[in-house]
Image (cartoon, rainbow, N blue to C red; front, side):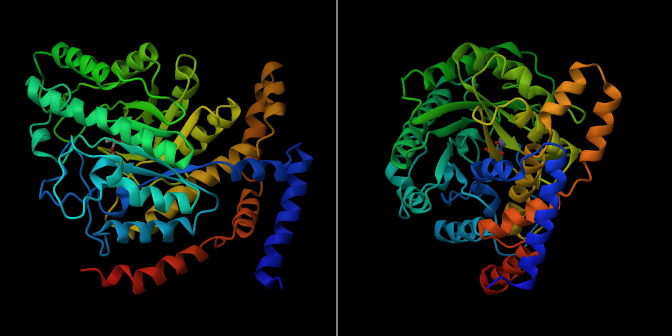
Amino acid sequence: MMSRDDKVIEQAYALARERYAAIGVDVDRALERLATIAISLHCWQGDDVGGFENSGQEIGGGLAVTGNYPGKARTPDELRSDLDHALALIPGVHRLNLHASYAETAGKRVERTDLEPVHFERWIDWAKQKRMGIDFNPTYFAHPKAADGYTLAHRDASIREFWIEHGVICRRIGAAIGKALGSPCVTNVWIPDGSKDTPIDRKGPRERLAAALDAIFAEPIDPKYNLDAVECKLFGLGSESYVVGSHEFYLGYAITRKKVLCLDAGHFHPTEVISDKLSAVLEWVDEILLHVSRGVRWDSDHVVTLTDELYAIAQEIVRGDYLKRVHIGLDFFDASVNRVAAWVIGARSTLKATAAALLEPIETYRRVEAEGDYTARLALLEEQKTLPLGAVWDYHCLKSGVPVAAAWLDHARRYEREVLSKRR
Ligand code: RNT
Ligand code: ZN
């Protein structure tokens, strides 16, 4: 039997549906489309980018996780349990974004160049049961050979070789994952290489990086199984003055080598937004990987919230009809709040923004713009903002079998009391 609360949600939805229908939007269709969108949930929010190598090595790479909220996952089983919990509070079927440092090696120390698909078998089995796909990342940080801030662009050829080998085997692991799960694995290369202070030689490291990437990608791999992505960055902690893999570098690389370009929302100047880059870049590359993140001053990795930019990213994807060409992933790490809740907040916000974009009367917008009626364009966009998105979103959660509105927090709190708070 339907509860009273559910009834209210159904009624609110029925009214909202009428409101959107009046502007020519088919809400049921919008929700059907929303249900097909998979967001790649980054495993590293669950344990502060720790991974399971137990190398005692600092995270490094210019990455920093601040906060000491209790309950971080200490083992792969704990991380999977936390992910299970987060996924149960997010409507839809999503993906997992895994880093190589989350390998399961049965207590043995396995070098980054010796990793094999078998070390990710339990992750694959876990995802298979849930009919989820997995994306993958070579880990170019938290390692003695990355301690001086250079990896693929290192001046020492032997260090470059080591990291090239890591990249090579990670693509094979990606392909094995994609094959096992029947969905291409996006394997994303991000390296920390850069310099705290002004370098003399900006060119050499970039030449070395281009050559190293070419070596990594030399082996042909069926895109049915693995897609290669490259991620640019503006600056990091300790690489304030120079980042080898900058936007221009990787844009050129992705275009000439036909790779997926990864755009991380926190990797640009504070006034620069990736929403505007989507249509520009998709003119030249087939596909984009998004690391949806939220930059705040110097930090690029706050929990994603429903900001103007998040709306704009979703609008650009939907308006440009790019849903099939954009892989949406999350990338943030916050250790100052409940880590499971952080996933839920970021993923639900991203889906809400997508719902909002799917509820736009795009044809009407296009028409008034084409007619040069910018007054109407401005007016319609403003009125759209207060249409009952919330009622539609609540109904979507209800129908997807996940808690409506802030009710998910009660679930997260219970898990915190019963599980997370017991971890010491
Ligand atoms: C770092 C990049 C990269 C990482 C992950 C952990 O600035 O954003 O995507 O966050 O690989
Ligand atoms: Zn990123």
